[in-house]
Image (cartoon, rainbow, N blue to C red):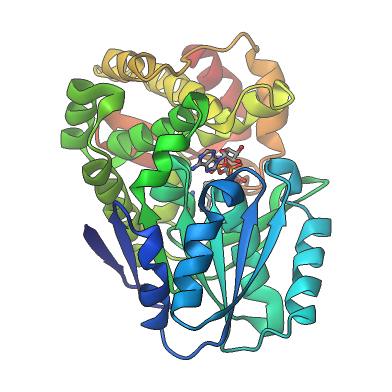
Length: 344
Ligand code: NAD
Ligand code: GLY
């Protein structure tokens, strides 16, 4: 078991290991006074892991209720969000009570945002069950829902009180969902850590789960400590995402987020023309991730210009300089087409 302490506007621990779901009751009890817990989950994860979490919490004397919504990104919307708030109100949760978000990034983002808003803020615990949620979305306090106008357009920075990452849950992930998480793992290696990159090259998708998740989480913890509210260093976590979101959107989301990020990293690395670009492309392919897109630059640019991270006439691109070293480069929009053409 590994514990990674986070120092931010709220301090908390990320606990990573095997067989942790059955200990959640005692871990939550350590967080202080609470009577009621609402487990927020979805229809794929709840039948797999709901019971063990509920029983563990009940053994510690908590009154437990559960709100389970249909699995998938389409549920991360205002309707489900309001339904959840009404559910919490009907169950009369108080300021000292808590939400446990049991699931992938969709549950974590929605459950976390509900915790940020209900009674102007109650505590919540993240229990990530996908690799992406384990290494990224459960850490750092970004919570959100989607609006018809776009992804994650309503949300709040709200740190959890605990992240409990039971690596055993990753065993039931569909292959494609696991690979999506691997794109984010490779992103951390490319951004910050040549040794992690070399380890992934050597180990492939059979990498040691605890070692790699702990390393990624530690890297993200350090970024969040430096820039919790995403005005500087945290922007680097968008490596591959600007082009990735464009590819995802243009495919009408037939391409997954992980596939988009993989293509985005490959495109920007080719455009930057760094000597180690071949190593990134080979690593992505080793993990079953795509490195090419058939969409032309002018089509992708339309999506990139509506990206919420655009500021005026510039887009912040994350440009690799070497493996483990990337820079935030404010790029005038009129330069995007030539950069994309160099990378496609
Ligand atoms: P997800 O939560 O939809 O999970 C992906 C799929 O895996 C779903 O079908 C789900 O039902 C299934 N699943 C989850 N855990 C499982 C398990 N253990 N066994 C079997 N199936 C399981 O998606 P995700 O990829 O985890 O997260 C994507 C979301 O995260 C997006 O909404 C994205 O915007 C958000 N995100 C947030 C942040 C952040 O910092 N808050 C960062 C990155 C992504
Ligand atoms: N996933 C991006 C962030 O947490 O900032």
